[in-house]
Image 1 (cartoon, rainbow, N blue to C red):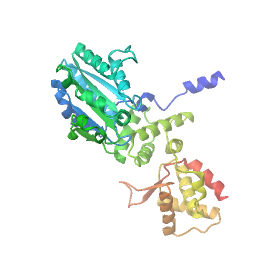
Image 2: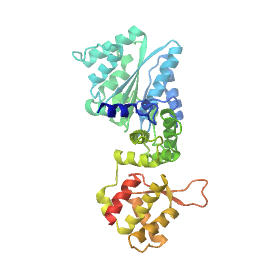
Image 3: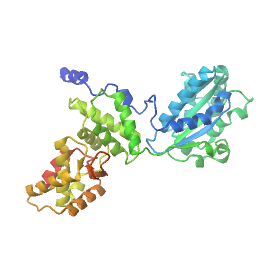
Image 4: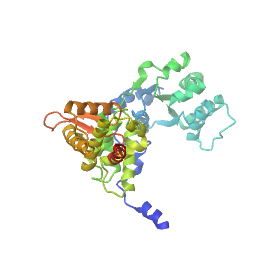
Length: 392
């Protein structure tokens, strides 16, 4: 038994650095977020003159909010250090620490890992924080990630206390700046006094990534995380196509990671579109047995033709002409009369609406425009097998 474990653990992998496929990884370059980095730099420039600033980063899941904040804060700290100024940067996830005292405990543990986790009120902890900053002659840059969780549970008292940190006390020279990150607009949930310290204009809205932007992100991670020539370019294209439905870079990176792990499981030295489809089916599949059973016979034959073609060519896409030829052959196999082109096209559109296939126009380099069909949700081999059983 020991050898099985050892063989698997020591077998070669297409992935050279798993850490790069982690959600917490911050790359050197952030594709398609340069403008936002520039904007944050303009907003927080006053910190270099010890003047506090607050901002809000908002956007849907997987739009790079956290990675943008981390990248920016690390850079700011390092620029300040070169000027002999100390900015202490602390990143708190408010889903994990959803009360005022848990947030402050997280901040104080940054300065003193042995700070006791009970016995201090919020006001006492704020005083301890003030002393820590004075002792270091530092200012604090605090990122409250998923800030909506904190506000929902505890209101905006802590945010008010932190953003007014220097008013209350003896006009200390140790300001606290806050960046809130949230999927939704939390400014509307702050009470008037807390809101007065957040300028509406200090909001950064991140939009969902486009398909081409996701393709760049996936390619960057492939270059950094995988051995050369172990991922087919069609696999990267397919991951970008699938994730573009949500505009979600996290989902794209997770698909890449799962497809890589699956390639390793099969002891193959190259990731192909079929491995991506398998990863998608495991992550979040919209194709179910019931949905397949509810298809009409010619819809099944159309889908079977697409699956056969993709499986045969180990490809991410098949064009409609090829699919239609294979459909005609499949019809003969199951003693059905192939329907005309317009009917076939109708079946494809119905399959697209039901989530079985996606259609896109062929890009540059193809003669005339043809539609490319892909199976985004389930391996071609699996769907072929299921359909052949149903058609029997």
